[in-house]
Length: 276
Image (cartoon, rainbow, N blue to C red; front, side, top):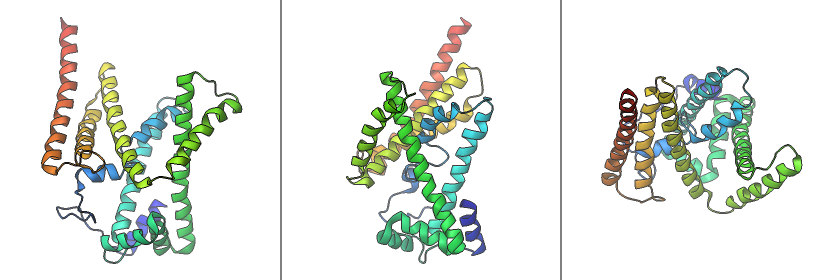
């Protein structure tokens, strides 16, 4: 699906705009930090962290973890980039055309128009099926994660169908009830919580790698970056503190620097204690 859409963009010579200083968001929101929250399931995502314990139970040799987890993160990042490029380049008048289609039929109409427009009826239908499969499987995994967390917390065995339904049905009803309110607001809070969780897991993984005596800098760097993202976002977003960028940007930088300093100072203190 992704390669079909990406290949269609290349074949048609679609004019994909480059990121720059010009704000293209219809409401004038800046790229930093809103882009990194809007794309909530790209290469870095807290949702990956929630799925990891489920997938890890299905792995036999541990070294398959790199292919499953790292590989899927890179693949999802590529999918996100391809669809972002298609959304900006496919419609006449660029972003303005995209906003017009969104107002008429939402993201579903955008997917339909791009898929069929680039790959024809048959290819378009296959792409649409692929897009539908993503949220269905993600939803299934999300509900399963919640069910297992509740079961582990309450120490309820999940071997029998009765016990599974005992937890799954109330969770499903809560999820359905949430769809009856303004989902756009729920999605914004989900996106922030998702990336905040990713930040916490990155710091946790960095500490684990340090304790194991392994190279941890490749985890620390995205942890610092994402700390700046989530703190800047919640400071500036309307569903957060709603402050200006003149406040949000310094707050994000300061929080990222403080988090990094705390991490390295803690490691330095442990090293000195061990040497003593």
